Image (cartoon, rainbow, N blue to C red):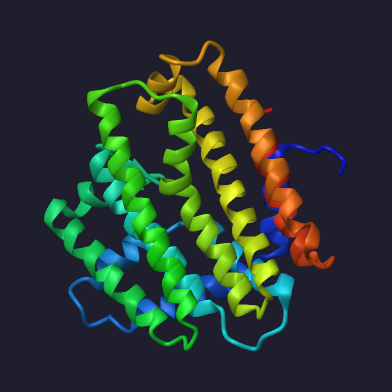
Length: 283
C-alpha cells in the first residue's frame, strides 16, 4: 500500500464509511431518546458526544465481512459504544482527568455521584439492548468484555502503589482494559454476520491484536506527558519507545494475519486500513 500521511489513512476510512457512522449515531440517538423523560437523558447525551465510534464501526465491518445474516447489527453496535462510554466515565474518575474529547470530563461537569449513577444507568441500557437478541453469545461477549475491562482497570490501580511494570504484565493489562472491547466488537460482528466458528474466532483474535496495538500506540502518543504507564515501563525497559514500536508492528501483523481466512471484500480492506493507521500513528 502506498504510504500516505497517517491522518489521511483514518480520514479516508471515515469518509468512505460516512454512511455507517451516520447510522451508528442515529441508532445511538434513537436508543437514548427512549429515556428523554429521564433526569439522566441530558447527562447521557453529553457522555456520548463527539465519540469516534471506532468500536461500533469495527462491529459493522465485521458483520459485512461475513455477510450471511439479515439480523440488525446496529443495536449491538450501540451497546458496544455505550460500554466504552461507561468505561470512560469510570476511567476519568480514577485517573483524575479533567478533560475528555475537548470538553470537561463527565465527573467534572456533573459530579461524582451523578457519574456513578449515569454509568449504572448505561449498564442497564446495555442489558436491555442485548436482551433483544436471541443469540445468547452476544450477551456473553459483552459480559466477558465488561469483566475483563474491570479486571484491567483494577490491576492498573496497583501501579499507583508500585510504579513498576514489566512487558508481559503491561500486555496483559492492556489486553484486558482496552483490547477486550475491540475483541468483543469484532467477535459480535462475526456472530451477527452469521460466521462459522473459524471466522468468528479469526475476527475475535483480530480485534484483540488490533486493540493491543491501538493502546500501545496511544501510550506512546502520551509518552512525553510522563503518564503512570510510561513511568512504570521505564523502570524495567532499557529502550521502552523502541520496544513498544516493535510491539505495535508485531500485533498489527498478527491482526492482519487473522483476516486471511476471510473472503476479500471492501469491509475486509477497511479492517486492514485500521491496522495501517495504527502503525503509521507512531512512525
